[in-house]
Length: 276
Image (tube, rainbow, N blue to C red; front, side, top):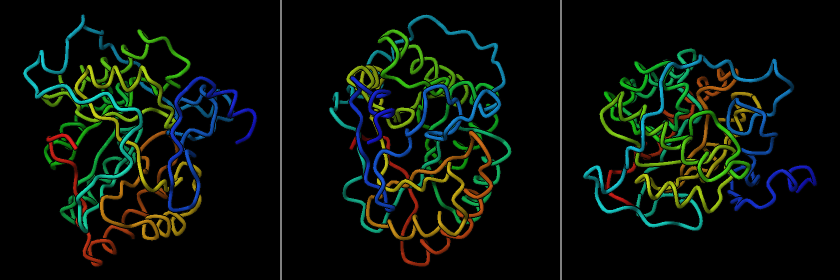
């Protein structure tokens, strides 16, 4: 691990994730000032993701979890879930950082064409700017997950700030589609104890990934396709992005690898509302 990255994440519980490329934890190999895609390096202020300011105001404590009539609070885990067990010939496609109409719309269209489901880990401020895309996700049977409000590096925040980032996103998803998210993914893949504890308090399970496409590096459509197909397997969770930069390669790659996965007998599905 480079010294700069080690210093950046000191004190965090950072989970290295095995990707099909052999890279671990690469989604968060960047500076915390990047408000773009999970792990995409920032080249300065001009490289930051353009986000529309939201007039949404944080409501008082809303108390997700059992107080809102949901099932029992999920356990406090020490590590995120990397793949979903017991899913023979099933895989999960996940997209982080959106929604962004430039790319999310096309991704939804491709998934709809093939009758496939996916998970979208949304940033609250992007969700507030594009609520119609959240409603389209739910209408098509996709699962919306919580990726914090503004994509900060959680180990750099106080516990109260982490809670605000997570709860505020729960609020906007709930207000838009009628139910809060049941899944959470830490920006940059940087998890700590507070994230696990607060996520459980808010009724969410922590989901990471099995295969990292590294699409934020724009490695080329063919490379993304090879990473997905090479890492395919039962219960595998694939990480891609639908916002935070130029995601045209991610869309093109989906068009290529999705029919190949289906032809190979895989079902592209999402977790049920029951806990794993």
